[in-house]
Every structure is written in C-alpha cells, then in structure tokens.
Amino acid sequence: MSDTEKLIDLLKNKSKLVAMLAPSFPIMYDSVKIISKLRVLGFEKVVEVSVGAKETNRQLGEFIKANPEKRLITSPCASFVRFIRTKHPEYVQYLALNIDSPMTATAKIVAEKYPGYQPVFIGPCIVKKLEASQDHPELNILVLTYKELEEVFKQMNVNTESLSSMTDFDLSEASTRMYPTDGGLADSSGVRNIIGDEAVRVVSGYKNCEAALTEFQNNPKIKLLDILFCEGGCINGPGITSPLSIEDRKKKIVEYT
Image (cartoon, rainbow, N blue to C red; front, top):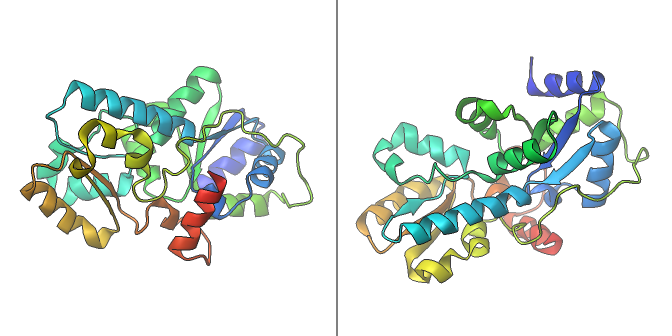
C-alpha cells in the first residue's frame, strides 16, 4: 500500500490526524487555503513544522555551548545524511544525529500535545519517508510529498470551493520559517553569534557536497557545516510542483515569513 493509499484509508476511517506542514509549503500553497483544505479533507489539527525547527535550533545551540570544540555537520537533511552513511562513513562522527530534525521534533511535540493522533508530515522530500520509517519508526510518522497530497485531494474530491472556516494553524512559529532555504538553519538558530561567522559554512546542492566535505576536512576553523542536498535548499525538493525559479521560490518563503 502506497503512502497516498494509507492516508486515504486513514481519512475514510475517520482517524484522528495531525497534518505537519513543512516550511516550504508557501511555494505551492496559500496558508489560509491549504489549512482550510486539510481540515475539510479530515485533519483535526494542522501544525507548522517550523515549530519543530525552533526546537532543533534550541538543541543545537545547547549542544554547541556545551561542546565548544566539537565540529558538526547538520543533519535535518535526510538525503545528505544517507549520502554520508553510504558514500563517506568517515564523516558520520560529525553528523549531529543526537539533535532532532524539525520533522521528528514536531512529531514529538504533536505526540505530547495531541496524544492518540496520527502525525502526517507533508513536505518536499521523498527521503523523509526513510527518516521516518528507518530512523524513527517509534514516532509512527506517515510522510507524503506535496505531489502526493495533491493526489489525495483529487481522489477525495476536495476542491477550492469546499473550504473550512478554521484557517489558523493549531501550532505555528514564525522565527524558523526560513528553514527550507539554504542557510535557514544557520541564520535562524543564532549559531553565528556563538561560534562566529567564519566558523559557519552554508552549502546546498548535491554537486557541491564533495567539495564542501573536502573543505570541512582541510579547514579545522569550520565548526558547523550547514548543508542541504537540494540546490537552494528544501525549496527545490522533488516533491514540489512549481514553475518558479529557485530565487522566486525563496521570495515566496521570505514573503510568508
């Protein structure tokens, strides 16, 4: 059974569901309309994953302060984590795997605030499915891309005319809405203030990963490598359908933020 079919089955069975919208959603959706459509679809709760991103930042800041000499490679990007594990296991020691990704942090917050609800992550990344099923099966996160969500809307016959009057997020956080852009983590977490600008490297795009790792290895002054596998960041993930350029996608995120 596909993840799309799993969600449709849950919806038809009137399961208690929480939609966890990744912060890249403004590229495809107006916030009011998508919240409304998700509620009409059958989600009782709709939350921003930027809420979990704030917790990711908190954990990262505390870790850096407690371990000032430790060098880290950020780990919210499931694709890059798997790239390291398969191609460069010698760098696994630097991955900040003890720090929750925004998705897992949000799922933990949801479990605490809405016990008994099924968390459904909706975002731009297909590899988040592996993070959920392989790395954190205990959180029971169902992962769908935006493309898959559109298929669910189609099959469940939800259109723009059938809108809910409940158009606010149940949980939201503005300070981390830039997370899906390259440098979003470094810029929103305040790590530059802790370790200095020269100790932070921001990289995006799989073509740049090898060079970034080489620089990280050769330059011990780099304390934090903030890296995302997709060019421009999660705003360019394969689960997004949009004709917009990377720059225009970033503008969408900036405008929403």
